[in-house]
Length: 113
Image 1 (cartoon, rainbow, N blue to C red):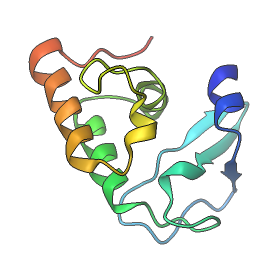
Image 2 (image 1 turned 60 degrees about the horizontal axis):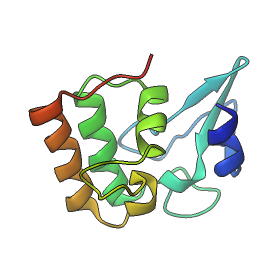
Image 3 (image 1 turned 90 degrees about the vertical axis):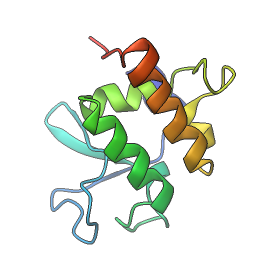
Image 4 (image 1 turned 180 degrees about the vertical axis):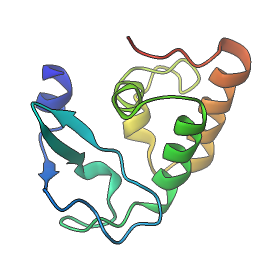
């Protein structure tokens, strides 16, 4: 977890949680607190998910991944993406969805832990 937090240190933390999204955002619980990685939101301080990230998040959840598994998947080099981190390809929605489908179809999406 240290690598994830130190690599992507900007997290929003709230007790109320997001209220203006039609899809539950990626939420990571650590030491009893819920953290929402900023990279998934359209603007700083809002809880509106990036449109491309909505589809990626939905596909990963449909693949059976927990939010922590999704966080690890997003920050792990991906063979389909030529060794790039999925988190660095968020603007490439179709390519990310193809990477997810490739793992689901060919490799079986491997859960972390």
